[in-house]
Image (cartoon, rainbow, N blue to C red):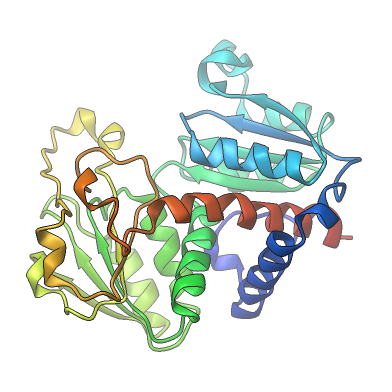
Amino acid sequence: MKHVLSCEQFTRDEIMGLFKLTDHIRENEKAYSGAIADKVVATLFYEPSTRTRLSFEAAILRLGGKNISTENAKEMSSAIKGESLTDTIRVVDGYADAIIMRHFEVDSAVRAASASRVPVLNAGAGSGEHPTQALLDAYTIYKNKGKVDGISCAILGDLLYGRTIHSLIKLLSLFDNITVYGLSVETLPLPEEYVKFIESRGVKYVPVKCLTELPKDLDVIYQTRTQTERFLEQGIVAEEIVLSKASMAHFGPGTMVLHPLPRNNEISPDFDDDPRAKYFEQSLNGMYVRMGLLYEVLVNNK
């Protein structure tokens, strides 16, 4: 594995191998504390981030590596002077052994990888994909359910622009007997290209109009915020689909709730102490999965 650009690049065996590596790192963290001691990793973020950037940087440090970083590269790097993305990458790949990048353009990760001599890890590309988020989401499902095969998953919220959703359903399509339910307002449906993609891989896709149309024994609810930054100029108005103690009474004890965070109002804080709320556990899992990814691209990729 050189670059991490899209969930389409993975095989089922690679994902399960990463999960096993992540478990081993988690259980033997001290043994990995110097794994990349001779490596420098750059984090280039052209869009805001808390969990992705900090979990990647924590992963670098916990593996013994060094980090060079720009948090707001859109305004605080030479991009503001007109430097192209590929020129920036050609400069930074001389300083670092890997580049972790978040960018506002859908094809940014692919363009960066085409210009880079070192591994590029996509930390979110516009409204396209966020593959490392999908990996930690699937890992959280795996840790809680003991499997990924055969699960039913409802995707909620902004299905049109939600890159975490786009990546997760692509990843789930590598597993057997998957059912995905889609619930959004009419203005933010799952794009047809994603529906066709997952259905071509045997996933059953079922659009629904309200929470009560979802099965009570649903395995996973994947809630997301509305990506207002993607459509402010288009005049789209979208109401949130809110999860709360009251609305979650429809579902059984086995229905876990995930959210890539940050949240606004779409999950009420009154649900946070419910044992089905797994989003903070999910966030922590992100650091360990990213430790596994960094180990794969910087140690195993030889």
